[in-house]
Image 1 (tube, rainbow over the protein chains, first blue to last red):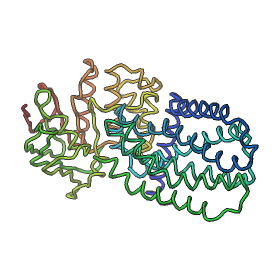
Image 2: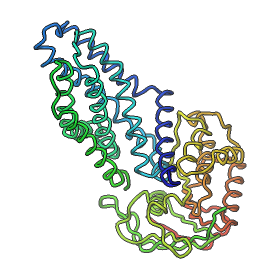
Image 3: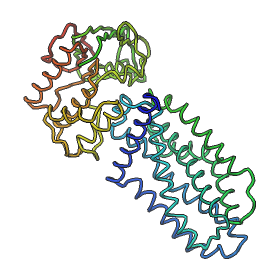
Image 4: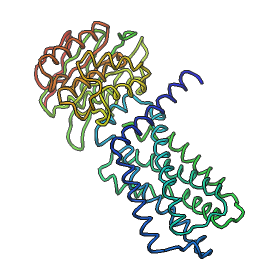
Length: 228
Length: 206
């Protein structure tokens, strides 16, 4: 690795470690995401009951509900990645010290680990409470990882875009949903196949392609969004 | 010590916020080892000028050139070549004073040891969370942060705000050392200020 690449990676790692260190001391995102997801999960399991026992419903309803729970939890907790930097005025120091692309990478990795941790908590509980059958566990894991990456990359970029706006929450939701819809559709479809055990088509490839597009767009757009 | 001599030149800087004209054609120049003092009442545009010089705010007209060995640095190089002390600059309250400097040292490719050295120099406890520091101690932490990678240019907006007499003496000493090493400084303050080696002044009005 060249000196420049190594210093870039070290910057991204520093941002990732700093964000987790701050998060573990305040637990803002973890509490928000966790409580939101658990509350929704409990309500859903009470209302639907063991709906997974009916094969048609398991395939058509449960993948959508699972991703809705993850989506809304992420929407509630992840905008903080950049909004907090602006609100607490730490963004000024970051702008002067960090390479924008390394900063984006560090924040994206932080967001991804938060989303994956949330999915690791929610999915087994959801599967047990609503008796969701999983015919292809490997494919379900791939759907959760690739779909989680979509959510993390989309929300990191949109959070950076809205961080300097006055109406952050409203703007975040308005901008985030169109960005996330394509990835979510593929993730739901993949989850449906993992539940039913059908032979997968191009869904995983399409989802990975969408993740790649979001990543490239993020790295290209972020410096313009971040710099005045 | 700044490795190479630098030069700052800015000309005809203009900036409005909505219909309010804040800067109307401000120009200046700072040579190695010199300080430029910017005076003016609250709201006269001192902080705006420093934010533009730092590359944190875009000017509507005018130019800012920080050059190094005759080469003008681009915006990202300029940002990474300066130290900035200002009331609107905050560090992470959840992290200790040392963890803050350690984080920024990693971003700027400086050994973390430099952070310890600066904290000792400004007289701050290493392990106290930044959120638990008094306003004067936070100002000392800003000074330590600004000097972390021995910047060529120091932009100081009300640099002695909230500092006690010892803090002011320490800040003046640090600024003198920076100028001795051939660094540049732009210092903004609402009132008169004892600053070493001021070669030029800008008076901003409302």
